Amino acid sequence: MSWRELRVFLRYLPWDSATARAVRKSKPDEDFWTPDRQLLASIVDAQRETTFTMVKLHGDPKKTRRLKPPEPIPRPGIVKRRNPTVIRFGGRHGSGAAELAKVFGGRATNP
Image 1 (cartoon, helix red, strand yellow):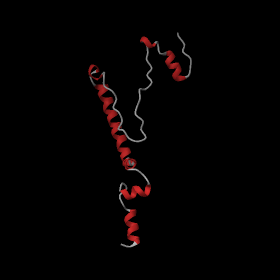
Image 2 (tube, one colour):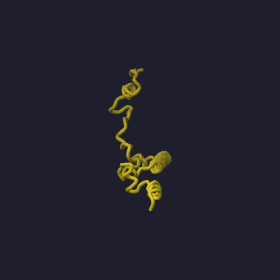
Image 3 (cartoon, helix red, strand yellow):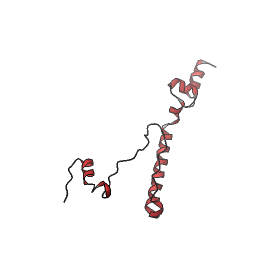
Image 4 (cartoon, one colour):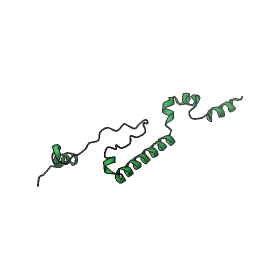
């Protein structure tokens, strides 16, 4: 094998081969999430959220009351969702005007 053949062989090795990873100095788990796999995961997440929304909107309220939104596919760079800030109106949390004032930076007024 000539030096030129070796160079061509190394240049066209698969992206996830051990030699290509050694040249790039990357780990196997870093190379797993290629841009096309990231895009595919985001498409799957969007489809799962759309399905959840359709079931929640068009399903029986008694049966869909406890449904939770689907978790996104775990991948690098995506932080797991925590409990979002929920603004409650009425009940033991008050009227919610103070909560809205904190969110929007204004002051709460009572009519």
